[in-house]
Length: 233
Image (cartoon, rainbow, N blue to C red; front, side, top):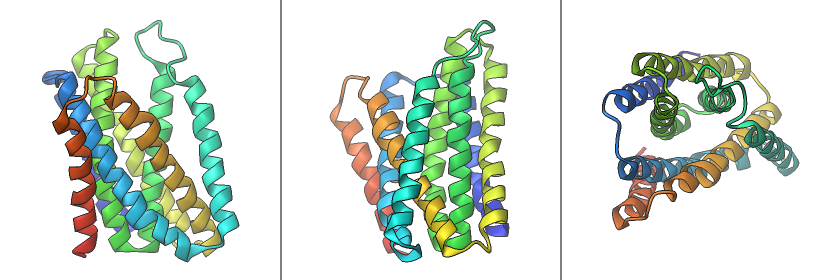
C-alpha cells in the first residue's frame, strides 16, 4: 500500500499539470503528436520489458488468455460509447467516462505491480506518468474546444487524474495478499489495456497530424529511454 501510494503521486500530478498546460498555453498539434509518440514508446517498452515477463512468471497460459481477452472485450465495448452522451452543457460525458475507466485501469496496474515487485512498479509508473500527462492534455483540450471555461476544464482534468490514485490504492489493498492466479488475471488485463492505448489511441491520434521525422523519432526515444532505465536497475 505504501509503495503504491508513493508512486501513484507522479501520474496524478502529471495529469493535473497536463490539463493546466493545455488550458493556459495550448500546445500545437505537432507538439501534441510528439507527446503521443513519446508516450507510446514508453508504454510499449513497459509492457514488453516488465508486464509480459511478470505474466510469464505469475500463472498458467490459460489465465493470461482469459484476462487479456476480457480487457479487449471491455475496450471494444467502451469504444462504442466514446463521444456519446449528453453534451447539451458542453460536457462530453461519454468521453469522460471512457477516460475515467482508462485511468482506473492505470491505477489498478500500479497497485498490482506494487504487490508483485517494487522495481517493476517503478518502471510501470514512469510509463503511466507519460501516458496520464498526455491524457491530461487531451481532456483539457477537448473540454475547452467544446466551449468550457479554462478554469473548469483544468479542474475537471485534475479531478479525473485522482482516479489513478484511487485505482492504485484499491489495487494495492486488494492484491497485496492475492494469489498468483488473481495477479495473473489483473496483469494480463492491464497488458491488453496498455497495448490498446498504444495501438488504438496514441498512435492513431498522433498520425492525424502530418508526420514529421522528429515525431517518429520520439517514439523510439521513449522506448529506448525506458529500456535503458530497466537495464540499469
